[in-house]
Amino acid sequence: MKKRTHIFRLLAASALLMAAAVLTVPCTAQAKAGKATSVPVELEDGKTYSSYDVTGNGNADKIKIKYVSHEESSTGEAYAVVYLNGKKKATYQMGLGGTVYLIAPTKKTVFLIVDDYGTGYNSEYLYRWQNGKFRSAYSHSLGENELEHIRPYKVTKNGFSVLVSPGRYQNFVNIETLTPVFVVNYKISSTGVVSLKSRIANNRETDFPAKAQYAWSMSSSYRINNAKGPNLIGGGTAKILKMYISMAGRPSFQVESEGTNIGWVTYDMYMEYDKPILY
Image (tube, rainbow, N blue to C red; front, side, top):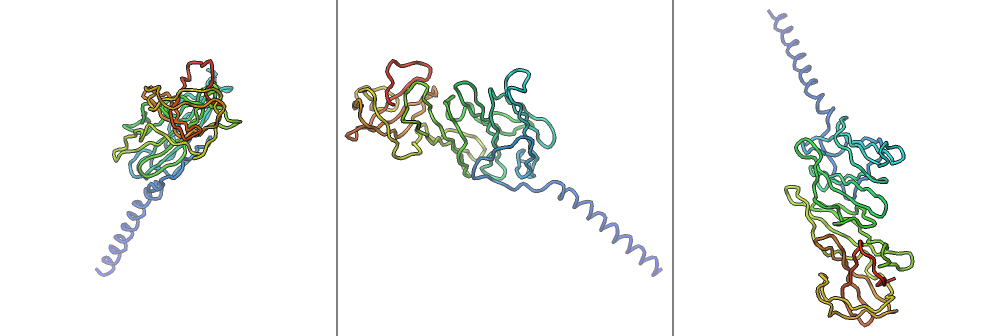
């Protein structure tokens, strides 16, 4: 009887060890989600990233991007294919080219930013995994419209920011070889809803020089509804301070001219002006 009892104990111990070994396999195969990001992560072609909880289920997922250039594409338009845990989950058209970025404000809040460009435009769209697929997480292009340059910038727990440059297509801003760069901020609610934090964006350079080519009557309002603002003196120096993004996505700019006169001027990127305001 003692021998049988000893054998039964050994068998029971072996069974417990085997059960423990089986239970530990899933834990090693699928790591716990870990990373949040302080800056956007540029996803490289063909590289697998396995530190982010894209699906929000508490475990790290494997995400990989395959880029196809517009020269290689049968349609003449570049695109990016997104693979999640080894399966193709999305394809994004990218004009002449672009990049996919990942931002993770928290360990369980992960977004993809699809940055693409074409002739005369640059746009960035935001996506998040919801109900089994990547869905749009913001209704407009980041920066609110298709400006010349938009780039992901910083990530915080409650939001993120992008850098926006209006470009020089209308000769509106052309200070030597420089263009002003504005910081546009977005906020993320506790439920993951993204919204524009403010329609007014500060110039990243606090003292950005410009020169007025012509005299111009500025508006006292960023909505450009009051032409009785101060004059912009032709040939004088000025500073570009802020940008206002209208509901239609068109920018206005706050300018400080000589004599500390501050007013707002604008341009419509779809309409040529006979006289450029600043250069």
